[in-house]
Amino acid sequence: MNISFFQHHTPPEIALALAANVRARRKERKLTQSRLAKLSGVSLGSIKRFESSGEISLKSLLNIAVVLGCEEDFLSLFTKKHYASIEDVINEKN
Image (cartoon, rainbow, N blue to C red):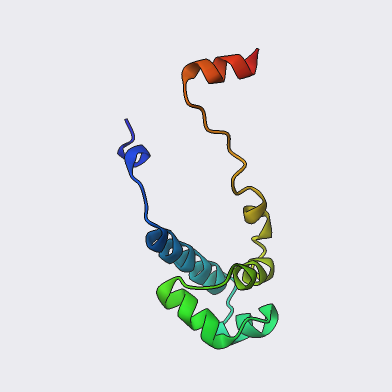
């Protein structure tokens, strides 16, 4: 059994994980924070704050995602169905 299935993350933990993912993608693309700021229209201060604290506006995060080629990730948010019981799964297949 996968123990991570039972782990719940807090919003600050999720924000920091997102920031780490953005930082990694930015570095993969060989972009400095300054270059990402220029390309995304997000201030350098906002990018620095985001990468260190996870705090950023949704609009700025979306702008960054577009520059990093990750906008499709946002379109899949909240699309997974969650089932209350096995009967819900069975009933959907019928």
